[in-house]
Image (cartoon, rainbow, N blue to C red):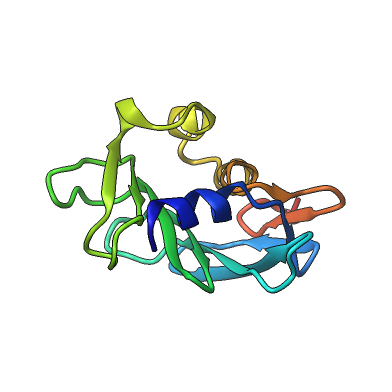
Amino acid sequence: MDKDTYKKLLSLEKILTNKQITVASQDEQRKYPSRGIFSVNHKFETVMNRKGHKRDKLSLMMNSNDGNMMRFDIIGKPHQGYPTPHLHVFTGENTFDSKFLSSEELPYTFDEIVSNPSAFKKDLELFLKYNNVELKNVIFYDSSIKGGN
């Protein structure tokens, strides 16, 4: 995906397919489909991944029907010389051609995620907002909290 397409898709207003979202529990991956509000042919999928070797691993990904857009590794093993948290931005021809943003280079919106990486529900909300996903009337359920909300 080229940079212009990436910017267009990132700025596109999106709406979730399901208004009830359950946060991924440990050792689980959950997918949250969405689409463009005014451009319904643009499909997206947010992935919350808590699988991995590290107990509290957390990665959030945004993908479109045009390709991978970004992956935000919040908690996990360092790779390619970058400790977590860091952001992969996929604006190249393939997923190996990504731009890395270290914790110091992250967009302002992600500051709150980095300061409290164990608040997974809030992390998902902030990630969706950054990706211009409308959250009006969306209910988040957190399976790690008794009662779910």
